[in-house]
Amino acid sequence: MLVLSCSTKLLILEKMLKSHFPESLKVYGAVMNINRGNPFQKEVVLDSWPDFKAVITRRQKEAETDNLDHYTNAYAVFYKDVRAYQRLLEECDVINWEQVFQIQGLQSELHGVSKAVAESKRLDVKLSSFKAVHLPPVSALPDTSSLMGSSPRLTYLSVADADLLNRTWSRGGNEQCLQYIANLISCFPSACVRDDKGDPVSWSLTDQFATMCHGYTLPEHRRKGYSRLVALTLARKLQSRGFPSQGNVLDDNVASISLLKSVHAEFLPCRFHRLILTPATFSGQVHL
Image (cartoon, rainbow, N blue to C red; front, top):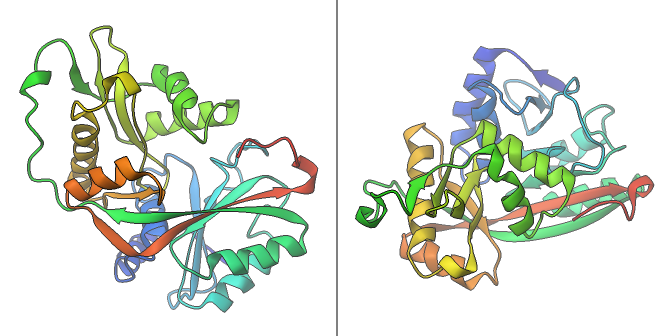
């Protein structure tokens, strides 16, 4: 195991990962954030350098953690050789197996290998799988003339909006998610439409892996074009900063898939896999 802490080497790694798109996108997004201030206190672990065969991004050991917070306790994985990834998993001090956490990536063997190692350590593993998408360059936004007045207006999220997002997110509704969303809003780009009271009615934000997430419009404000506007606005923000505009969507989310097709998003050949791993100690205490 090698922790890559040299800023020059981290920039080189970022460039190397680009040649392995789309499978490396999650790790690439995390490394980009590390190289731009590291607001989420991440670090990179590899099997070797520079000819690495597996790379994992994780929370820095010295960062404050909540053992039930699988949102923040998140690892992104990319490997050229799945056996090298398995060996990294099995090494001491690469993964904190004593807390609830998630592993995510865009490679098919990720689930099987991670599950086998986790179950040998008596952790429960829950898998979610999504279509992975990438939005094309956004040269122009939809007509926003209706949003030029005081209401509704196109803007961005604030930490004060975290409670609403926590209540409306299918993965939310708990204290860990509330704090996680507040941190995302503080650290990364977002976009939203606000009503005449200044409250968000449609929004999307960016996670620690530079992935667009939690795109949502309140039911009473749907079919007004807000979701399309918010998605394209956020994609353009990310692209202007050099980030890929990537996202994930469930197979049965017909409305979001239709929206993505309408903006000519590319549905990637690989799928996004997210594993939530729970030690027996915390069984029954975790909001999945």
